[in-house]
Length: 262
Picture 1 (cartoon, helix red, strand yellow):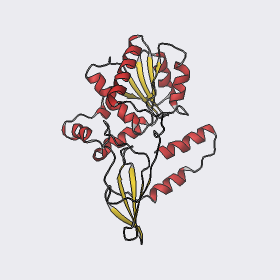
Picture 2 (cartoon, helix red, strand yellow):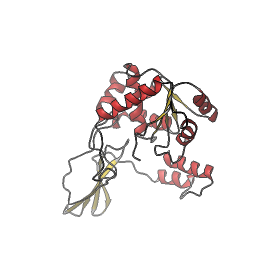
Picture 3 (cartoon, helix red, strand yellow):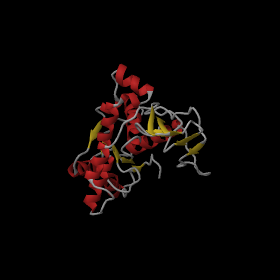
Picture 4 (cartoon, helix red, strand yellow):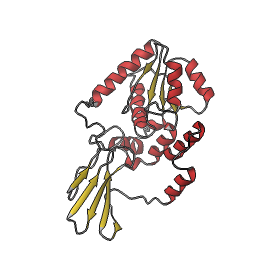
């Protein structure tokens, strides 16, 4: 889904992409899905096992077992060792590890990640103050992962009366990505899975959210009253979030909230 969207963006911008839609579809046809914890022989002397990395839906840490077990290698990819509202934390137990290749997005000496409680408190304060003064809130988000996390948080805020009930608009691939999360509850956090499967409470299907699908709808949002806008891309390098920023930035009543890596 994301790769096809990337190709479409390249086509719209007149930029040659590194691959075509046909290449994406061919790659999907050659993809072999594997379950977490399942040992798979990928060569006569190499065994592969995937483990939850806690990053986005289905993301995995790669464990490679060479020969008779004398050398084991782990490549983490992006990972998160903290349970979120959306996903369980990354796996921490492996049979053996002799070498580790680890990502370091937030590994710098100056990097500081606030607690979830502090982050949600700051979010509430900005939302309430902006809505109170009649402004709009633009939140650039990644379509997969961060958008769904925000949907869960905002749905709770409104349901509990923590913030005023204003329209919340989803623009970009957010709705499509969210539908995939809804269709795969086994990969979600235990708390969220319990709500969806046993309590009949699915924040992703809440009436609080409206999907935006046309430029005319975007114009109506810009001209309308206080609202919250979740739009891709999360880093403001393209997509509808850039369009909203250009039209909302000059009004001091509005707010821009970054919730992703910048």
